Image 1: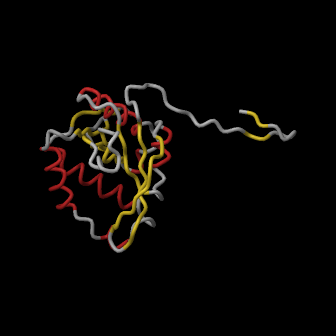
Image 2 (image 1 turned 30 degrees about the vertical axis):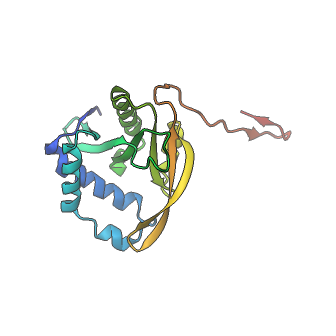
Image 3 (image 1 turned 60 degrees about the vertical axis):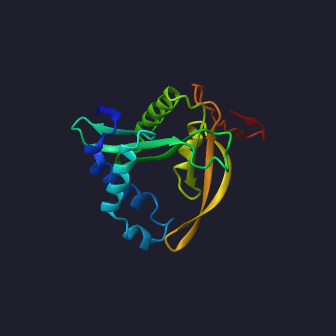
Length: 191
């Protein structure tokens, strides 16, 4: 299947809100209190995305399948946590892809497109905040993000720990790879 990435526009708001809420409900199911997930509002999400897309300071891309169905999106801009991370200027704020489209390389494509747009806007580095119990943090590690720090969030009726990953140089094309060494029969380690 072929996919297309393009800048989001106001006609995409409903589809982006649909992806946003669906992914929250699947990704955070057992991480965030269920009452919070049950009360996610499509209308509120649409209003938020309308404001975000109208704000030219934000970078918003969608990815659609060959039938023009939006299956994911990415959004960000300037670092909102400058007091915590003053050395970072950009921030990836959201990247969501329907569960059935994950593990197909779409996240990497959105990530690369987002980084290129940050560079065009003269950003040199970036961060992302993610809940510590969210397995998507491994995607950010795979994309070269380095753990920076933690902070506590209050979400619904519970508290969560957020972690941030940073990329000091988004111009760099190389990804840092984790090399796992395995112990062989003789007790020696090998790649």
